[in-house]
Length: 165
Image (cartoon, rainbow, N blue to C red; front, side, top):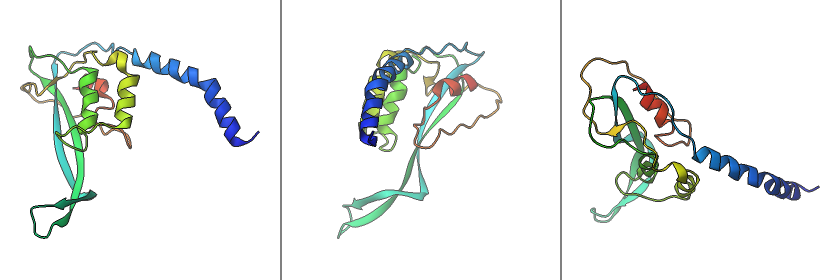
């Protein structure tokens, strides 16, 4: 059987299974009991100037000059926070961060982002624990540093990071 036909057969057989698994995953609920502290999250947008992320044209110079840009790094910081009356982040709020991950404040929809939002549609309104930009809890606390895997988004394990905070 040629490879192309085998691949098509696998898609026909496994397609419904993959869709069913996606629907189950979209219905996941985070069941970790909250700790003694409220949780805050802050989005920090910074550039790694040691790594090029592409070029852009500076139109303010005459003639226009090609300039290199550092790699944008959307960094999320979770921390113990003071209790707040503000609403906690939802899965939809975390997913929306994908649109500004490299464009900082200028949302850019991507095919991957749209697919993930469709896949997790059932969970978009689900509240997690962190309140964005909540006031810091006073005191000394250990630091946990988490870096998502290669090609993953900054909030990849938001539930784990909120629990650690």
